[in-house]
Image (tube, rainbow, N blue to C red):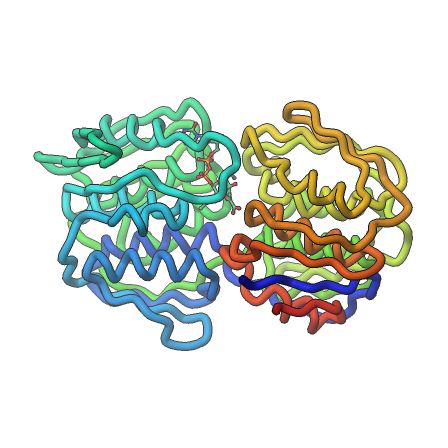
Length: 418
Ligand code: EPU
């Protein structure tokens, strides 16, 4: 089993290129199933969730491989199956995108419930209710979902009770080749939703309003191939900024999109960091002791993202004063707190609220990642701790970060994988 060993207390300095966004690349890979011609995806991160998506594509009879470092090629001219095995479904939550995509392509799909990081209950009721409105009949037996659109998928008007990211994307996937018009009210406005729409439109789909609360999809007969570049990962960018804030130092994050981070960057300024952003890079400096920040409430976009909660919390462990987080999106997204406390952090969790009393120092400790972003939070804290930390179960971190130890060592961190 692999581990990360981190000797903390080294200032960071250097430049890090921000990888392509996991949460855009994964639905785009599933969307490739809808296209009858070759798809070339640039800026596709080499992370384990992307390899899981490739395994599902291969299982369905498509060809999926990396051509160059970050260019993935997908060919779905012939798909030989419409079901995904339980083993593959369990590898990640994003396996669920294949439901909308395969239904859109073939009018039938058999899956089991998806796996993914345990962040509390992650039901799929909204996905299924939306698909039913689109003429899909769903039979659930022995944990298998047998979904069929006998008369083809039909456009529908769907009003979401909550702007769920995955539900919005699954509806888009099922709707692009459907008969008629689909309207999604109270759609998720995350930039990754707009990136998926950008990809589908590049293949000939007719989607408007993605990135806003109302998305309109006019069904088309077929999609063609395209070359597309995945947007930069705003959470990975927030992670490297958190690491620099925690350890101190200067970092230039490039090939990023600061415009997508308007709820995150001001939090670093409140901590006392200097943030200069241009269209695609951030100059970041943290050379003073950090200060606590005003309460942070995780929200849907454009609010503060739940995915950045753990890494920003880890940076605040040594900030002077008291910081408060209210986690509004997931029920159980504080699993990193116990591990941060092993390193000397002073954090109290009460339901969906975490209160962080800044401490003077953190100490290296043996810790264990319990989910992707929580694991990245442990790295953030370890970089600012005195002594050596060991982080195990790093397969969670590898789901979303491309060679995180290499990026951080290139910026001066003392971190190795064993
Ligand atoms: N929800 C339901 N029913 C549903 C769907 C969602 O109750 O049918 C609830 C969820 O339980 C949760 C809330 O709605 O409480 C938000 O879930 P959402 O559907 O928006 O999230 P998701 O699509 O499962 C995506 C990201 C997550 C990110 C969330 C919130 C991808 C592949 N995943 O998940 O990313 O935290 O949106 O922004 O896009 C991560 O990258 O570490 C990660 C977990």
